[in-house]
Length: 445
Image 1 (cartoon, rainbow, N blue to C red):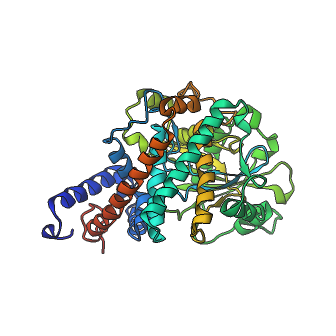
Image 2 (cartoon, rainbow, N blue to C red):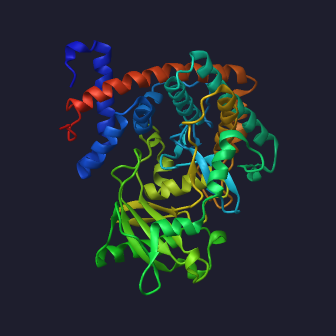
Image 3 (cartoon, helix red, strand yellow):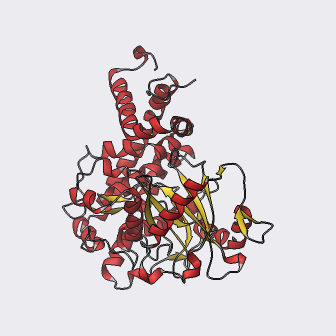
């Protein structure tokens, strides 16, 4: 660890808190897969935004200690995405066949303050703005634009009956969002299949061997297929395919994930499509669930008892947050762990911030992100059968904010400035702790 004399008391205490929270959050994976978590922490050490993406438990540990004037009894317990930062938006093909732009990645979804999603997003904007050398005033304008768009869309949902059909798509977007949609539209299922699979000598499609691909022995293959059969029971009746679609053709183990999923196990399953034609085969991912970061600070016995495991929690949360969710979305249990199953889609594309630098590009983009964020809080999938939130979230949010839109936007901008600076300091303290062996089990070489 950095020599104690080089840190003042407040910094030393904060560094200890960072280490304590991260070790507590990842202790199981540090023990089970230390190399994967070391890789995760090395990625987090690269720059403040990467640290922020990988340290959601620290964000929630801090959030639990803050006063929140913008929530009441109901709005402190709604479905939240749990890791709403500026790079967790992108495209998907919804179950109605529309290519839409929306919030993505529901691994951290849970019940909590709707403001936690907005604060986490706002702080990420402060970090992105800082990395682009934007002024404090410009960053403030970014956060206020996002907040205003969010609240305006929430109010629209509260006043309309057809919010289920709202979507950001090819016909009502422009700028970076439209470009992301157009890029996704150029992709094809056949191209995805060709990149992941090949036709063998028996004229059957199989997964390709390659980096990150692990072939299974007979016992493991059997366990995965048995878990798959149990997963099929979790698909809503109105989203079930014809029976031929559920024939498993090949299974592989996968490794090599981003910052958020390092240390988690995963399988890919190749299943028959709607016909025996080779070009409509489907690739599914079966990924081990992980405790949601907000769940570490939320004391909610009803929610704890409701979820069978973290795979169940992830899938149920996604259906509660996403209109027209993936028809393949479901869950299963394998090796005493919960797993979430969904399609590996050719049409999933992430929003890229590298080329978005000018105010005239950023502000329209943030208006779309505000709308997308409002949508996940207010519009659930028609197949969602959750009973944990039994009121209209949009009406509850409008009720607690009232006419104080300007004050709310100002408070969010103030938070973004303060917490963005905190994250930059935390990143430095984390790097010093990690590289000097202060994180037990992950001593750097």
